[in-house]
Image 1 (cartoon, rainbow, N blue to C red):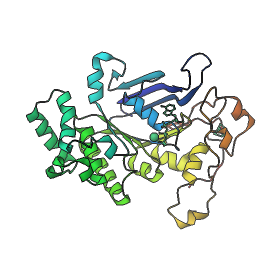
Image 2: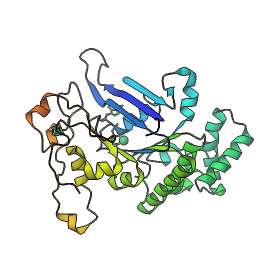
Image 3: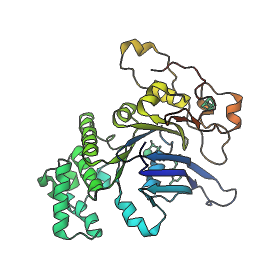
Image 4: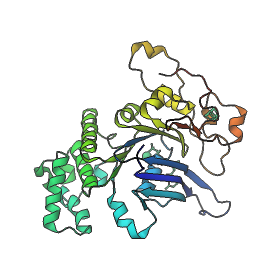
Length: 326
Ligand SMILES: Nc1ncnc2c1ncn2[C@@H]1O[C@H](COP(=O)(O)OP(=O)(O)OP(=O)(O)O)[C@@H](O)[C@H]1O
Ligand code: SF4
Ligand SMILES: [Mg+2]
């Protein structure tokens, strides 16, 4: 693999509860020792059920939340290095789930796009040129720019968010559920436009979604999170066809099979809720819901096993468990 564009190492976010992060105080281990990389032009899909820590991880990468521990390096720049802070932020863009809430309802789309450029020292004329160029890239007609956000459809609003995110020519886009709030037909169109943008401009994506079909369509590699930790990580087809982690198996079991012959395959559906992430945690985080759990799983945190070709899994029995794959 080519050299990493983004490198995240041993990243943690512990949210303090009550009296703060003092000795014996409680905290939520929202992200707990996550390490990953994204290569230039690559899409890393991030999946995991609600509360697994996806948004918290994304917010730290975007510099919107300070990590409790760990490092984030983008294109050789350390997020903590004040001397390259501006360049770091220019190299990364973000698109969130709800486009309406990320746009200022009281100003026109044009003004929303112009503001970050003015803050970056662009003259009005240069900003106008860049906005024209960017609107073209995302198929946003010029006449839409003079409207207010509520005068646009959801798909058009999301195109404005994408335009704003790519305007300063970042190398990485963090997309947190970018199409979940859109109509199904608009979703497909937006995903294809994102793929097209990526191909034309060599952007790398961290693509967060609950939708396992969407993540497969979009991603080169997939990272599966549960309880603040990475459970499995690998190339997309490897994770789909040769997954070794029981949590990945449960997630994929919930996807309806494409072929009728697979309809009677064994299902490993998830029951119960994710355990609390508060306080000290012992053993495998998935043990309370894992159909393969043994006593040893509750004793010690399973190490990350390397199965070759960049395929990693945090299960003490990775590669040894027998289960039917879809
Ligand atoms: N500001 C906060 N203070 C305390 N706990 C928080 C805070 N933000 C998030 N959490 C907790 O951290 C955990 C991870 O939340 P996060 O929003 O990262 O999950 P997610 O994977 O993005 O979920 P979803 O799929 O629902 O968006 C959850 O248990 C959540 O309750
Ligand atoms: S370590 Fe044990 S409990 Fe955890 S996923 Fe593997 S088999 Fe299940
Ligand atoms: Mg989230």
